[in-house]
Length: 555
Image 1 (cartoon, rainbow, N blue to C red):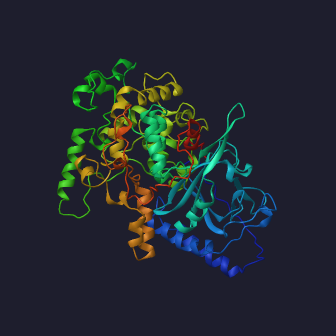
Image 2: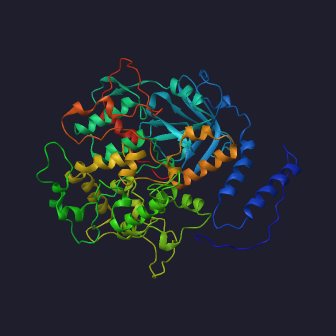
Image 3: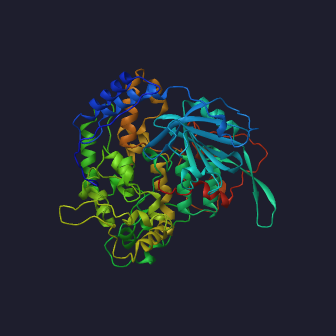
């Protein structure tokens, strides 16, 4: 463990000013009983007990203190809305109001500053984009993106490009959405002012624009995948719906990568992704993006298929019993960046040293052979600016020693990587290569497209446990509150599939924009709004890239 336990008798004395000792003792007794249950980690039963115990305490109506308004002439446009400010494995209860100038969030706990109940605030004019998000399995959250460092309160301690607010329901979320400006002012270096649309990442208009921008080469593969993740409900604030990226390279043993294998020869002019286009050398260097992780190893896939066959009489049969993205898998990669979150998830301890992320080669070998390991990568693996801390133990965390005597410290890199930054640059180079660009649409079909669910997912060997497909409609059909909480807890721990964005095969990258038709996009998502024309040009602006940039780690 990353701490030392010292037993010492301590006497605490309390003076109760606003409540009775009896209430305190009753609550303390209940919390103590839950904590004494002998589990190595927080069980489903314990989690449900805590939720039911704390929920009435948070149900009290909270009012925003008028002293928190930046200007006294501000007029609230909403009532006090019960809200949670969400972060990775953290949620701060409080209330939100919107005025004609700002959005305010006042914490119930007063934890963001030395003064109790100081409110955070953000200027409406600094908002560059929004996105409808989930809170667990409820479609009631809103992510708001800002210009870098423009409008985030100093009390937060660091600049963040977005905040994630969870409301009581869709009605409250949409009430706030309606008050956010639909356009924003831009000023170039010459002082010329123009207007740009404030996109909602989960609206169809945004998705159409990013597909078009990728086809025209205005954004690269990395930026395109970030945008698709955002459009599909993924957020850096939510580990249960963290952005997912593919393993691209497959060679982690060679001393040098031969980039001549990253170019395809004799590519079919009709864009047919056939076996003939891929040489053996290319197949050795690159992962096959036409297959999900679970199907990359034929022998292991046969084991999965054998189990699926034995479940043919079951209503909820599945091919894979684990997912490609879940809180535990994200923290596997992020342990050096987010040790507090790992300790929270693991009940105050790091995972076993043998199961910690310590070698890229070892991790790739595991996703090929381990029947319980199907995880894909996260965006930081392709970003030299933010990914270095992912690989270096800069905080000197005591992560333990493996059974083979290896002390876990910095991540061991492939021989072809001269440094962590060099590893990230080459990973990014592989992502932007011709081979990856040609086959990336196949991977998009598996994660965000027509092969993500249903019969086509089964045919593509891409069928996961039914829990990963749960959504708001499934929760609404459940009658008991305990049943809803149980389903939500299981889904968020197991891993949740992204929203489906495309209902036909994703087109290959080309100058032929005629393929971007309405038939390409899902119409019955329920979150994929098709916003009416408001007179503002829907032109994609390169300056909007910052609205889905990678977040800094929580401080």
